[in-house]
Length: 414
Length: 162
Image (cartoon, each protein chain N blue to C red):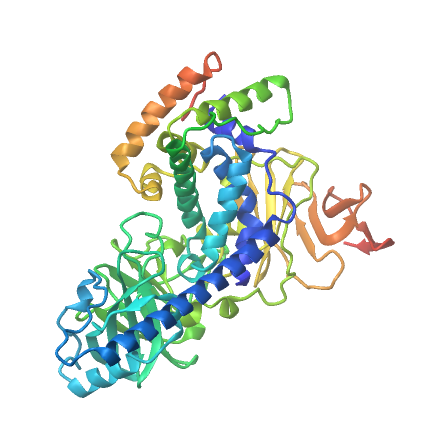
């Protein structure tokens, strides 16, 4: 037996306990709230102590030093075409000093705020600022970096300074969006790498998305790019060249705050809102890592069948087919989309489906090729002669399906 | 945080399987560290949402390692193997699955993590190195030694690998 097979077999029957997801969500929200409250309390305490110190300190006392992050931007010469504009820099620093929500997450703020870039954009003059901060439970100071525009802090982010690998994926986004939804200006930091951007994805006849990429032009480590958000601009920061394939490089993507909010990505229009992995066949074991370690939407995304920025689909229906192959289907904003795999897990082809209409009986109907039948799904219902829960792999030639819901049976033509 | 809840709903099973192997077959510990890792991800979701799976794997590997470090500080009874799921199918498969988990449980934590990430999660050497925060050379040497050790531990049930 291969090691891989042995490990898969050893874990094939493992699943999380009922209620696990609810426990995680409840615990996560509670933990997050506690952290915010603790941070706020500590900040309030520090503010009180600091105020007391300032009020009682004699004028000859040296200033109390704050945390000092090793971020080079804290001491770098100011770049940008407005670097000599002392008034802009002073106004930006004044705006930066006002309390923001991110201040609730830090326990100490250093007085070393520094404008490391000041420049002109189509939306007006902006400043990029760095400052040292300390976080709860962390001995190392970190940098707080953000952008100020028109006396307003557009966005701030904490740049983690942990040498350990756990936070290495929490990389700095370094991209800020200004302007309207019709026409936006993106201020992008190089951070020592190249940035490529692309808009207007094209979906080919093979159903894969393709994009034309161009390099962001940096000056003093900052690029200013104008694009229409409706054209779905995507930015990638990388050490190499632009993507030369149509594969989704989501791991290199950088996203401004306005486009990272869950509510802007949201659920797909007309989405079913299901949240399960359902089986249409009796055999319910999974393949190797090809299937086991990712959802079908992940797989389709990595293969370029889904464009950047789509939310993670929360449901899929899986089925082992009569000929030994494996199929899975989920939904996208464009309708149902599935994938067909060979028995060993090798991806064979994409399976396009029809539109998804919430509220219709048996809203998921994906006809499989080669006479393998049709995947049907209707969450919460019993389907077919076997009265399978949620999903059923109907044999070829099936023209109608019996659906049981709340004790009532209806026959739905296919 | 709809994205996050969707991620938890859909990926918990797969992540639990990785955690189970990383914990050497201790299902209780696997559930505990998975729940802890997922709860910690909630507050960082905006930063990690583009690669949540990679982040979760890294955090699970760290959590499993830290669990073993904590255990090693205070002597206690040897870790009993958690309940090994009984695979459906014929008896031989049951023996194989049981022994592979037992063998994994006897490996040093880093060596075990390398094998799990490389052969169960199908990560490349570079991805494994990035996940564990070590060099590719370390991954190569740990893989080689780990496979040899697995072969010793598995006795007559010879394992093969690609």
